[in-house]
Amino acid sequence: MTYQVEILNPKAEKLLRELADLNLISISDSSEDPFMDVVERLRKNAAANPPTLEDITKEVELVRSKRYAKGKA
Image 1 (cartoon, rainbow, N blue to C red):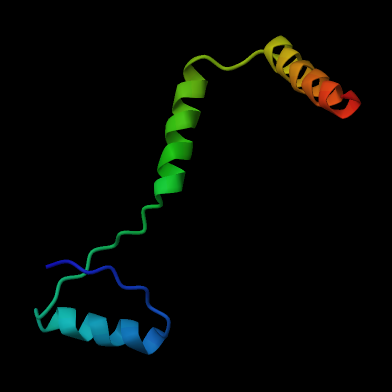
Image 2 (cartoon, helix red, strand yellow):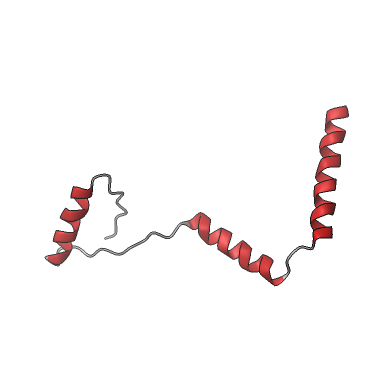
């Protein structure tokens, strides 16, 4: 059986460590953040084909022109 526990008080962590020392429970660090996993994957994909300054400028100008068109309408 597995539970995810958020420790709010350091005393609780000490109690959990003592239970682990008695082999009553096992503790595994699951500090992985799903959001950061996605960020890392995106960074890895972008590193293979990074956008040029021209690409970035074109995208910025496109977004600006769309916003400007909405403001005038």
